[in-house]
Image (tube, rainbow, N blue to C red; front, side, top):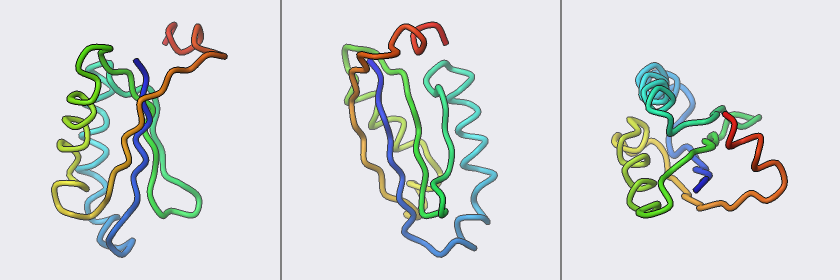
Length: 97
């Protein structure tokens, strides 16, 4: 199962930037575990998005764990929208990653 996590900042950008290193360290751990496919900030920088691979069984629980592990979320700096996604066109390319 694939999923999207849309992150929207709740704090001023200087507070976000002060916590970005911890956020990106957490993202690198997700990437290393095979959960994160890609991530990046919105332009303009009002939040960001994550493209995720989660288990078919328990996808909602896995997505909650992703959200709950983010320092931005833990510190109340961002809100999350978690969306399970079933790509049709281009799925083979995602599966190959």
